Each structure stands twice: as C-alpha cells, then as structure tokens.
Length: 84
Image (tube, rainbow, N blue to C red; front, side, top):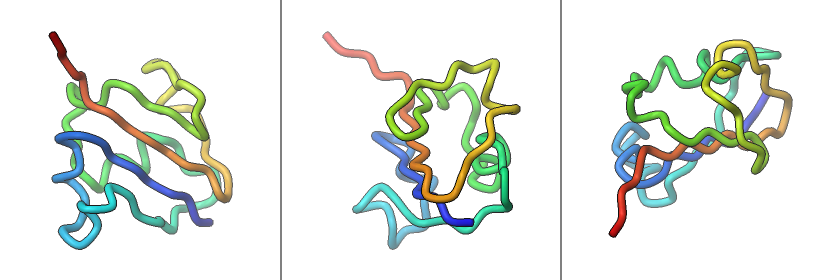
C-alpha cells in the first residue's frame, strides 16, 4: 500500500537527498504497517520523533508501535522545537 511520509525541520536530513526540498515522499509499505515500522528504515533517533500525526490527528507516543496505517494515509513527524 502507499502512504505519504513527511518529515519537518531538522528531520528532513533523514530523507533521501532528492526528497529533502519537498520534505516528503510516497512510500510503499506493508499492509497495516505500524508507525514504528515506517520510521525504522530511516533511522530517526526516537528522541527527535516528537510530534506524530496521521492525517492531521495526533498519535501519542504509547500508540506509535501499535497504531496501523491505511492506504493513502499521510504520516507527518516533527522534532522538538524551541522558540523564544
């Protein structure tokens, strides 16, 4: 199945070089893949996986290993961001 995978801010460096400008890519993933299964191949440090959304809806940390994705989902991830 296909999903859209988006990484924001400093996390874009974990995308393939040709996808960093757009900060997103289409991925073929196994049916019912979990968020963790999608993230693992990109070797994102989990301390940097702060805000996770599926189709604009927040997914708490304790659901990221069990929450399953569906065809056409958009998985978006932001690192912790500080401001002032």
